[in-house]
Image 1: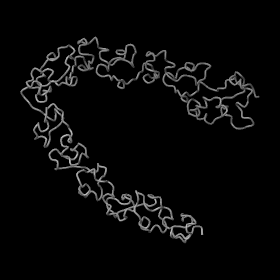
Image 2: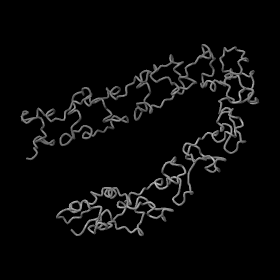
Image 3: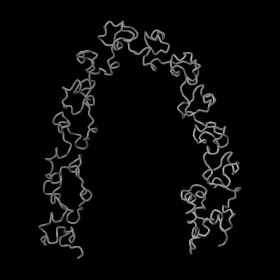
Image 4: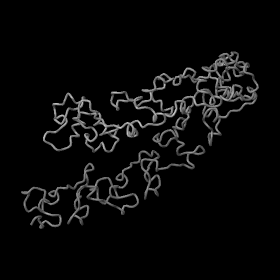
Length: 489
């Protein structure tokens, strides 16, 4: 043995095969990484110092780490003065560049054992006490802890107005960030001149520019617009409670029940006919109030034409609800008659885009009258397959099945195409090329299955001089060019 091994390898000093392949002059690198698994993993995944240094991918370990130099020999030939930390998983920036190695690397421990998270080294300096996690670098810079970058817009409380110029400590006095309240009263309870009477949604009236900048949209907050006679009222005219939440309803009847000359017969929605400027001015916007605009022929109808009972009874809003008896389509097209018909007339200016149906009109179909395919107004009764309409035009007498579109297109019956090889799996070669379709397909298709078979014997049984002794697969010997032409002879 050249000499004693280092202390770390002392327990395997007598087992030479742990580091050397007997009687082999091949490199021993694989044996090294077999034991030093972490280093091997770094090299494979291109991580860590050995994974990032190109030479480590090819160089033998013994080039840098010699052995048999004694128990106290340091096998890691590392020059700390010239070491390039950029070749590790933790490049040095800012104050880290001037930091002593021992500050991060504990003496006697492996260099790779050093922590790489900010929190591992700086947890004692963390004024947030871990509440913001361990990724200090998300906000702080490696140059200076006080150099902080943070986009408050990405939080649930974007800073605007006076909030934008405040120091962090003004709101986060106890360094509580993640779970800090975003309610106004959590900071401004002492500024609330209403003493909580208007609730805690200060932003309903105030904004972040100034407390004195007040903007209250009564409609946006309460759903009740102050217009007409309501506009000149004070808050106390309707709200007796200091928190302005005493009104349980915002309907006319809640305040004007005593003014109702109809004694409730017309329901509680006085605003359907009356306006807020004057009770005496009566009008009714059917579209605005009910959501059903009276256009076309509907505009000339008397109310009782649709409201045959009380005006408070809900009426259907779809066409079919009133016009089911007038529907010549037998409800096949649904209740939304307005998709095709207008409100002025059932028969005038009927519109329909057949391209949106399951059977778009192309080619010769475009010039057809509706009634040529649709015998009745029950349009869905019309079949969509070619055979249903064109059975009489089928010169193949059904021998090629009902799917005319496999060869023909709607532009013209004469413009046809069919790739016998791709569409049937039976290539037409030799004498088969010139045959007419009917030469093989001579009987009507049954249940969609074509009458012709790909087996030679199905067509050429009578031409078989062997009387079936060699089976029905004639193609094993004969070609499609001629029966007298035998392959291999």
